Image 1 (spheres, rainbow, N blue to C red):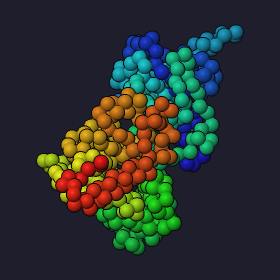
Image 2: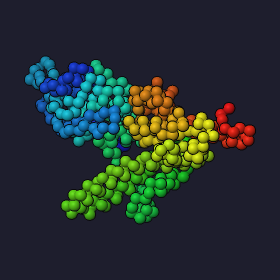
Image 3: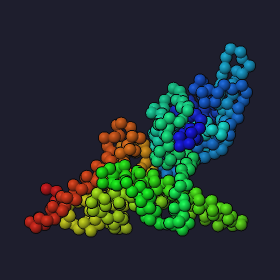
Image 4: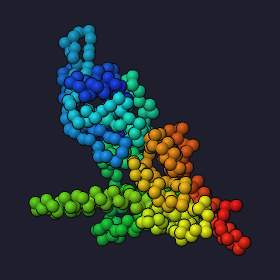
Length: 420
């Protein structure tokens, strides 16, 4: 086990794509995988029946909550008394997860360091299936047999910013903290959480050597990673302090407290991303408005060069740019399509790793250009990369349009600002 690597959470994993027969077995009364040499590498040779506590999780490609059920799995040798032959099997009971499994779904059987087992089933061709394959560095899960990963502590298994989001989707919370910053934050913020904008500014101030002028992609990720580290450090302390006081059987108070914690976690990441992007654009001399009103009550995350220019019908729409911002996409990327109707080709920046090919293809069909920070593009398949742009490329695009707009607006002979 090595802190900061997947080995902290998994001793070994087996991963494959379910065949039609295996998917049917998962629903039937057979409930077994043949324990070939691959699974023996995960569980060892059975000298007797081994029953492991297990958590089963089924993940879809949308915003639906995962299906979760706790049960057991049994590892045994059906020919234990046979002198010349072994026949290992992995038995699992009927669960809501096994009943959801279908042909083509991705299955991961992970042995945890505490001796329990995590069984993940991810919907076929979904983003979460793509992300799990990237997380465990298994480029291609086949129907023929399990791919096995042991000793998950190589450099490719280091837990990164993108890894944390994926692990949390499968119920594993990565507690990344740095107590060296705690005293400074308690003094600065008086033992409470500041506004997200103030906290984002503080996070940037702790890495003063980082600017977005030369490498906006790197700066954005460094700022986000630093804010995540600082937030988790402060949150852990404040939560422990509040829980130590107890709730005196105040169930409603406890539920409200838990809900506020969850809501803060959900909203903070997205707001932090917008806060840091706003500074990226400022440091690169890019004009923009944040949450400017367009049609109806729509408020795109960023409009370039401004909401005023957008509402001016004399401004050529080809000189306008909108950017939606979502820390993770799932199915919510479609919300961007209804914003800023004057702008036909829209842009969306996300920190989500390894979005599925089906989803990126659908985005292309809707004329939505994905903006992915350069480092995160390594999580995507080779044939997806030509359809992605990084933040630096997006800034150069907006700067070019900004310069064209300023140039045309200075031409008194041209009543309408134009690209030509």
